[in-house]
Image 1 (tube, helix red, strand yellow):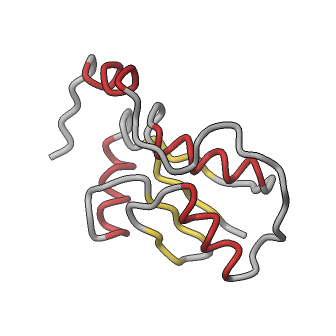
Image 2: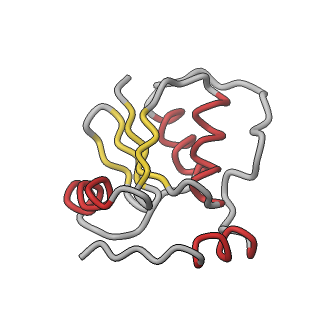
Length: 111
């Protein structure tokens, strides 16, 4: 599979997507949309919206998605085999207050 995950470096939703990739030992590109404005612009262009995470699997864009929803997509399309391994972090949780504070420290303007 060719997987590109448009993620924030520190975010509950993004970490949930990473946890699903780890749970199924999937190789993927972790595309940083915070520190690279070109990556953010690419995500917006491909997804048609500005919210993250977005995950592209073999050309299919899953916009504004949680780790739980990525897992559902992978299982429903038989792209992975179910397993009982527990994810390392919550897969359907927003950013914590600490993560929000970390993001507030650095102001980035994309457009």
